[in-house]
Image (cartoon, rainbow, N blue to C red; front, side, top):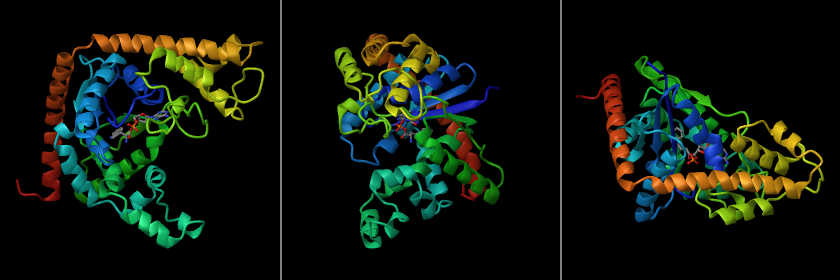
Length: 342
Ligand code: TYM
């Protein structure tokens, strides 16, 4: 039997090349070696307000995007999280093993909500922090526990993600260990898999913040569905330093980020790109990168247009059926261990 991978994307905004280069490109490569489950995590998306019709449309579009990016439905299982009820059931059980302190220390929670109790000794008062915390939805707070249940439900061996998810994976392992200790061996302790380069693609307008689908400026990211000319424009406008040559180094974060994107899309090393642009300046470099991004997006968008809604529906039903079977089996065991009457 092949080891299993599980991963997912929230249907909460435009997918961008950071999502592809940090996560989905890994999935495509791993789907031969592993038994693969790829989820569209709509339950996570509703931790912030969503327009119902848009959520339904985006969920479907993300499934189509997975396929257009190279996830092969003959090899991998693609499904929608809310369709498999066991995710929420296990999340509830794991909640009873989670401390509030496990969740208040999550960096994503802190950055999304501005709630950081350690910070309350500094510039923001404890009172102000308490008010911020009191106004945050319980779903957003509990988000990592639902994520743990996604992963543990399927006896996942490995989770390929971008580096912003590493802390959530650490909590997943902690909860699995706590459950196993209290109720006996039940869950596999999953590994995290992040790329050495590309696990954190930075914003084109600010190389100190990660590329994000919720960024305020559209010049932060290149969306997979960007119009091709617009994508080119975004590259040409990307922030750079005032240096003259093309080098790959930590102290030139803007250039390092562009080189990383370039190299990953061309599947070569950043050094190879540096060599290619030896003696040339930013204008040539950016034109080259814009061309590469253009071809990648064009191929993706053309493929996307050929996939029918009917095909996607079939893939999602088949995926949900497969996932449900594993999830139901696992929950039978979990219920037994916890002491539920069944
Ligand atoms: P989400 O939807 O924010 O992002 C999906 C994937 O894309 C990666 N990613 C990036 N990688 C590199 N550079 C970036 N700028 C960048 N931005 C995003 C993310 O690390 C992620 O791998 N909580 C998850 C979804 C989730 C999940 C799971 C993932 C729910 N349950 C179980 C794995 C396993 C999230 O919000 O991803």
